[in-house]
Length: 293
Length: 274
Image (tube, rainbow over all chains, first blue to last red; front, side, top):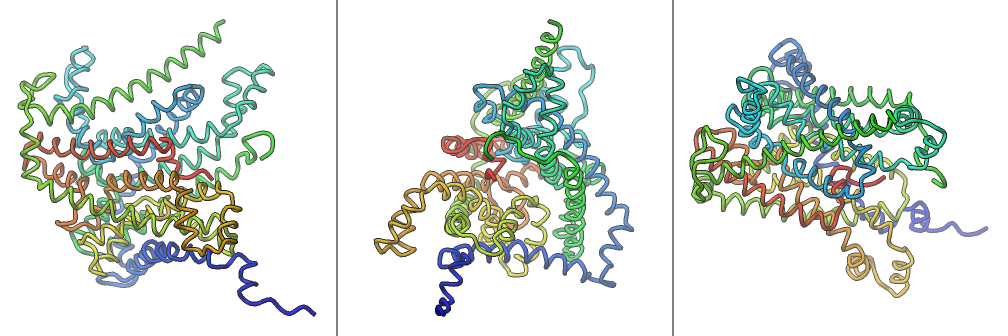
C-alpha cells in the first residue's frame, strides 16, 4: 500500500498552492468593497428610520414622486438603447470592411473617455438657443425658431446618444469582427444578396453578442445621473431614479431609503437583463468561426 | 445593376450618419474650447475677441492647483494599488485551476458590469460609516472597486501568452515566488501591465460617479469639481467653467493618446477578450 500523500501535495493536485493564494487579496478586496456593501445596503433597506421592515419599499411604491422615477428612467433609457444598437449594427458591418478602422475607433472612443460631465458642459453651449447647431439650422432656413433642446427630455437623450453610441458601436464591432468572413462569402457564392446574407447568416450569429450589448448599454443608460441633472429638468421630466437615490442619501440623509432605492434600481436592471438573456436562450447558439474552435 | 446601386446608396447613408455624428462631436468639443478663449460671445458665430484671462481666473477661483494635486494623488494611488492587487491575482487565475474558479471569475466580472451609480450608493454608505468617505482614502478605495478586477481581466491573457517553461526553469534554478515575479514575470509582462495601468489611469481621471459619491470638499478630483462648477453655473462666468473643462479635457486626452499607443481603442470598451 502506497503511503497517503501529504496534505500539501493533495491540495497542490487540486490546484491549491502558493501561487493560488495570490488571488486571495483581490478576492478579499472585492468581497469587502463590493459584495459586503451590496449586502449591507440590502440589510439597511429593511431597517428604515420608522415603521416595519418593508416601510421603505411601501413608501417608494406609494409615492408617485418616487415610483414615477422608474417610468421616467425607462422612458429615457429604453429608446436610447434601442436606437444606439440599431445604429451600431449597420455602421459596424460597414466599418468591418474598412482598412483604416483605427482612426474612426479612436475618434469614437473620445466621448467615452471624456465622460458624461464634459459632454454635458459641451452640449450646454452647443445645443443652446444661440449655439452652433441651432444657428446652422436657422442659417440654412430649416428652422425659424431655435429648437428647445436643453433642460428637457431631449437634452438627456442627446447626451446619452453621444456617449452611448460609441460604446454600443465598439462592442458591436468586436462581435462583428469575430464572425468568420468565409461564412458570408459562402452565402454570396451561393447567390445570396446582401440583405439575405444579413438576415440569414450575420444576424443569427450576432444575436448572442447583440443581446449582451443591449443589456450593457441599457444598464449604463438606466443609471444616468450627471446629464439628467445638468442637461435635463431634474425636478420634473428627467427626474431619474439615480437622482431620487442621491437626494435620499445626501439631501435627506436617509441612508436606509437611499439603499432601498439603489436596490430597486438594481432590481429593475437585473430584471431587464435576465429577460434579455432569456430571449437570447431562444436564439441560435453555436460557433461563429469555422475550422478548429 | 439596380441592386448594386442600392447597396452603394446604403453605404452612403451609413457614412453620412457617421459623419453627422462626428461633426456634432467635434462641434460640442470645439464650443467648449472656443468659449474658454473668447472675450465676449453672444450673437455671432465666433467670439468678438480672444483672451486667455479665463484660464488665470479659473486657476485662482476654482483652486485648480489643489484640485489637480488631489487628482494626481488619487489617480497615482489607484494605479499603484490596482497593479499590486490585480497583477498577482491575474497570474494565479491564468496559471491555476482551482475549485470555485468560475465563481471567483464571476466575482471579478460583477463590479465591471454593474454601473457605478448602482453600487456606489451602498458603497458610499459603508465608507461613510467607516469615516473614510469625505477623505482622499475613501475616494481611492471607491475607485479601486472597478479598477482592480479590470486589471485582472486585462492581465489574464497577457500571462497566458508567457511560456510556462520559462517559469519552470526559474523555479529549477531556485527562484522563489518573489524573485520569480521581480526578475522573470514583471519584465515579461511589462507591455500588458503598461496597457492595463494606462487604461486604469484614463478611467480613473474620468470616473465621475464613484468619486462624486465619496468625495468631500477637500478630496474632489477634476471631473467632480467640473460637475459642481457646471451645476452652480451662474455663480461664475461660463467661460471660466469652460477653461476648467478644457484643462480636464487636455489632461484626459493626453493620457488617452499615450494609452492608445499600447492598446486598441476597442479594448477601452470590451475590457478583455474571453
